[in-house]
Amino acid sequence: MSQELCEREALNLHSEVKALQETLGICYKDAAHRLYMAEVEKMEVENDTNKKFADLRMKIDDILENEIYPRIDMIDKGIYEGKG
Image (cartoon, one colour):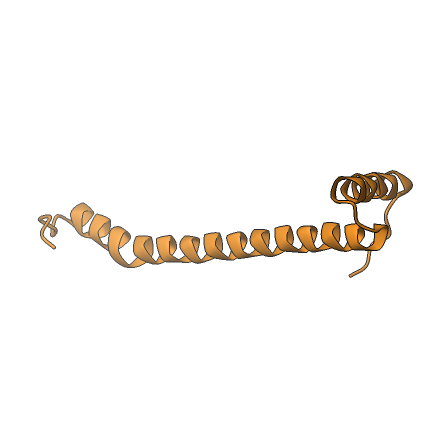
């Protein structure tokens, strides 16, 4: 999925590349590549974090559905004594 940048976004990226170029003393192409790779890494971390939260949510839902709600139902029916 490719999205075109607005002029402001392009200028901001250009400024970041120029600053990186001057800071590290590297060519524009290398600075742009470093910035690109840093953004890719951020996206990978974000995707990994989102996946971990989704997995955690599924585990919580499973515990609620299979352990907690049945015990609450048993308590409501007066047949659970808190063992196990």
